[in-house]
Structure formats: C-alpha cells, structure tokens
Image (cartoon, rainbow, N blue to C red):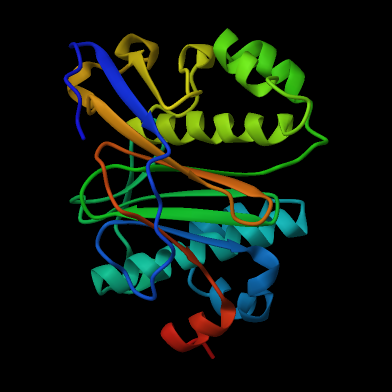
Length: 260
C-alpha cells in the first residue's frame, strides 16, 4: 500500500475502506464516538474520573452543553486508556508535546480526542501517532470566508461542484485537514490552503508543515472519513490499517465499566 515518495514530501491517501464497530478492542485503529446527550444518565459517574486539572478547566467553560461534552469525553478517554494500561484513570501518565498535544509517557498507546457541538470522538492506535477530528455539519457557519482563506482552488472547486451538499463537502475536507495536522503533531498552521485534501490522493511538501523536518513524520498518511449521524469524523494515521468505529452507549458502559 505504500508508494515511493520523493524526500521532502508526504503522500496522502483518502478514504480507504472502514469496518463496522466491534464489541472489543481489535488492536488495529479504533474510533469511539458518541453524542453527549446519549450518555447523560451516567454523567455523574463519569465526572469522578477526570483529573483535578480537567475539572478546573471544565469549570471555566460557560456553556453547560460544551462543559458536559468536555467532561464526558475526557472521562471516557481516561477510562479506556486506564483499562488498556491497567492503572487508575486519574493516574494516567500524560505528557504534552511542544504543540500541547497530549501523549502517554513511553508511547504505550497512541490516542487523540476531538469534540464538537454535543458530540465527540477519540481514536486509539497501538502502533503510531494518530489524529482525529469531528465536526457537526452546521449550516449556520460562514464557510464561504473560510474556504476563501484556508482552501486551495481545487478544494474550492470540489466544495462548490454542486449546489447540493456544499456544507457536507466543506466539513469533509475540514476534518481531513485537522486530522492530518493532529497526526503529524503541528496543530493549526498558517498556510492551510497548501494542505490539499480533496480527491483520493495528494502529495504535500513537508515544508508546508511549519517546524517539521522529514525525520519527524512518516512519508505516507492514510486519512479515513466516516459520517455518523450529522457529523463528519476523519482520522489520520501513517500506515494502512483496518479501522473500526464504535458507538458508545450508556447501557454498554454501565456493564463494561461497572458504573453505579
């Protein structure tokens, strides 16, 4: 599945096949997704699993819905990682990259978390750094100015290729961009229009990613996209993998995690 890529470039392939969710961790690339409202019944149980720092940060969030999504998503990520590492959820040895990306000391497991309005997703890999982004398709967003500033001409043409589905195509590309940036570890950069993610495959110069050298990243990335409910989720990883998406349900968590 890997292509020979000239030094100084990253080859990106988009939308390889995705598998349906499994009942247990398969050891490949796993994506866990939920709408926050579906977990409201176990909110009080989940709240006790976040750290003091996360509680402090959550307390500064004005919106109740955003605060609840933050707490639920961070608690579930901790619970999942704790199950894998066999430690207490609040004792997970998080460290942070120069761009403030959370990591686990020793790279025992790789993960990434993203949340949007009332929904969240986190991705887990046993083998390499991973990036995930989730965005709810919101037609109240002024996408036209965003497209003008942060998308290339080919991406513009793709988004506006038809009067129908403009917002869907916008959020498809936006999540691809974000997932790739999070996978390589830069976070947001200034020249987003140079990271072209329309089509099935693109070659992107490493110089586009600010502060990175070729030794920092893989020369291949695979970006998988799915659309549960009214959201787009994209995940980027530096190898071809079976990808599984799991819908998190309160009833399942009460059994598997033994929440009271």
